[in-house]
Length: 203
Length: 89
Image (tube, rainbow over all chains, first blue to last red; front, side, top):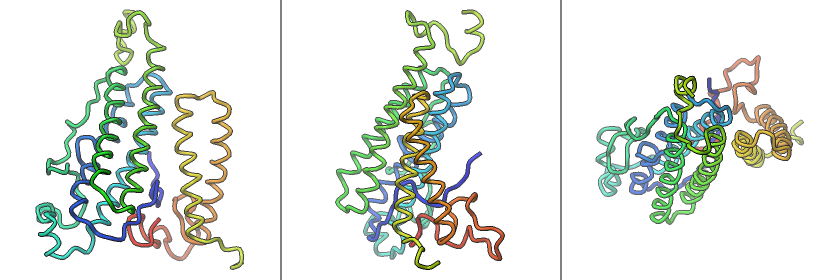
């Protein structure tokens, strides 16, 4: 169960439209390392996670990613509102506009639609947490790439906030991996998969 | 009554600050559930957040369903702008 809170996690107040940069930033909505992928990844992985600390972190980070998705969508929306047909053509946003007008739709910057194949839910805590840590670093790199292209401080500020959260989440997933390993055989972390009950019975 | 009315922008900024403190320490507590310092920090900012959200709802409309002003003649949840809109939070 989720409850909506009618505010952004961090404010987004962009006064100047910029459809060219919106096309880049939209990748953090529906791209391979975007916030939608992040949220779906963690919220999918948590059901079979046997350790309560890690189930907690997957739930709470997965929830925070939804708030980040909302911030990204707010940024893209504010960068593309009130565009004229001339601005649409000049900026190259016309190719998105023809299918979605000025609505938000999850796509990568290069136009690939969002797909569940952007993430894995493997059912093995070591495997999944390594994916999660990699995902946070990939998202951090994407924000670094975006920041190299932006000059407007009104856009930079919320993007920097989101970038910092990737670093914090990476840290928490690293601690989660340590917690998982503490439960396993220190001589062989791969001796059994704690998400597969039959392995535990045979242990 | 009107003299005590808080500044909308300042109150919202405060809600963002205390909510972020709660959000961040919540993740830390997930992986450090026995950390006393973090537990006290959480408790302090959670109280501040609940109070600030109630204050905000009273003067400027609800940000959460739990602080929606009822009974009322109008469904105030949809009255104020949404976060991505002009004048939104």
